[in-house]
Length: 322
Image (cartoon, rainbow, N blue to C red; front, top):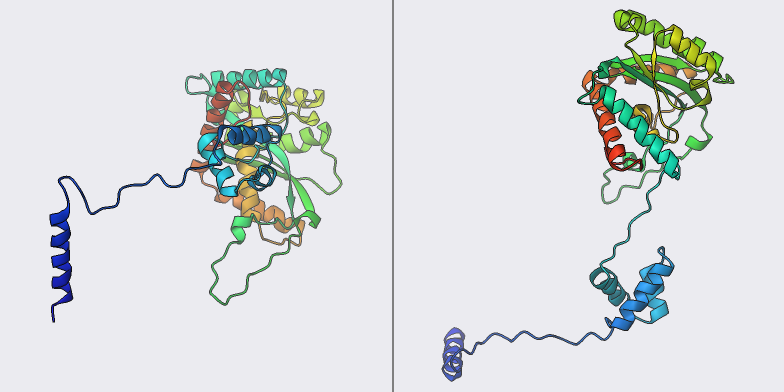
C-alpha cells in the first residue's frame, strides 16, 4: 500500500507538469460581490441626515434609509471621513469682548512674569474660596477594583449631593501654602470679611516669610473676579498692605491655578472619606496641602504661564490639556 504522503507528492508533481508558464496553484484575488449600498445617492443621504442632526446615531440612519448598520458605518467613516466625539464642556460661552479681555490679561501677566518677564514668579500669591463636602464622592475610576470570577460587584452610595459642606479660602504660592481660612457656617464672604479675615491672614504669613519683598511692594496677589475681590474696601486694603493686584479675566477658571490644579487635586485626595466634624475636614485639608511637594507647587505656576500663552495663541478661547 502506497504511503499517503508519497501519493500527495505524486499528485503535486502531476499538477505542476500540467501548468503552463507563469501559472500558479494559488487562487486569483477576487473583487467580491459589488457593493450596492455605497452609492453617491446613499452617501449624500447619510451626509444630509448628519448635517440636519449632529446627534443622530447609526441605528437611526440605518432605519430611515433601509441600509445595514455596517454599510452606514462604512459610509460615515470611509466615504465621509467623519467621527463622533463628545461635545466640549465650557464654563461660559465667551463673547468676542470677553475673549479679547482674556488675551489682554494673559498677555499682561506673561509680560511681567513669563520667560522674558522682569518680575519673579515666586512673588505671586494666588487664592480662591471653595466648598468642600464632608463626604466627597470619588471619581468613577477611583472605585474600580479587581474582582475574582465569583466576587460580587461592590456598591458605593452616591451621597455627596446630600452631604454637608464647608467653605475654605485657600492661598498658595510657588513654594507652598500661604493661608487657609475656614469660613464659619452661615458667614457671608463679604468684602469686610474677606479683607479682615482672609487677606489679613495672607499678609500675616507674608510678613514672616517675605518681609522685605512685601515691604518693598514686590509681592503680587492673584484672585478671581468675585465682588468682594474687587470691592473698594479690598482695593484699599491691598494698597495699604503694599500688595500688587494681578488682574484676572471674567469667566476664566481655566486660567486660575486654584481651579485648574489645586482644588481638583484636593478633592481627589478627600474623595471617599466621611468626615463627621468641621475640625477633621479642616485638619485633613491642611495636612494634604503640606504633603504636596514644593516641586509640584512650582510646576503649577509653570503650567499657569503655559496656559496663559496658549490662551493668547487661541485668541481667548478656553484652554484644555495643560
